Amino acid sequence: MNCKDCSEKLDRFVDRELNSTEVLELQLHLESCPDCQDHYEFEAHLKRLVKHSCECDTPPAFREKLRQLLS
Amino acid sequence: MAESPAQTAFAEEALTHLDTLYRGALRLTRDPDQAQDLVQEAYLRALRYQHSYQQGTNMKAWLFAIMRNLFWDRFKGSRKEDVSLDDVGEFVLYDKLRDEGAKPEADVLDKLAATEVVKAVEKLPPLHREVVLLVDVEGFSYKDAAQTLGVPIGTVMSRLHRARQQLQKSLYDYALESGIVRANGEHQVQQ
Image (cartoon, rainbow over all chains, first blue to last red; front, side, top):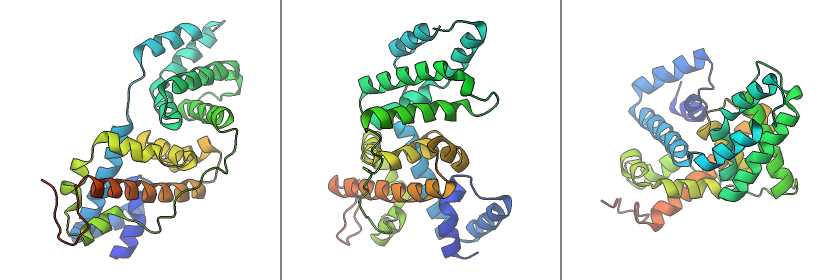
């Protein structure tokens, strides 16, 4: 695998959508390529940032209202 | 509302997915009151049509599908063509920042405020926003996201790809405006 192949598969790697063979090939490349490893860490960090930023709790009063409505 | 022990059990199980539905509704409507109305209607509809839910399948995805379909019916008049996304070309934030000399992860991501990330997500057209919500926020597989949205997996992947490029462009623009990075070739990063 070269850096171009790695870059093309990075999204699916971060999303855990590659098959086991592709994962192994990509991991081997990352171990030998600091630039791609850095890129991978950036994309994984960004995905976590989006997740954590968009998380929010359901307002307790609404949760209770809905629970009563459905029971 | 629940008229039998089976309905009560169904409602209780459905309510374990409330946070996912509320988060999704809030990001789609961008309004807490509308989000609550949407979620309540989705739960009432789910209870009414619980016979169409197949036991053992993904209830979270089923509920989310009900909620997002209601969103399109109620808030968008089902005009799904209203989804224009700015053409940002092939924009890769990592490459852009590297070209400008910033160490992307340490210097930029750590300085981005959560509120700005939410703004960037909410700026996406709904058809692209909902894919980001499912895959990045809720951790759905491409397959489950495709099933939830009623589109092929390839459509999920292409929408996700375009959404991420637009999202990264928005975050880059914010980083420039706020001085987190400077696009003047001096490779300066705000401390």
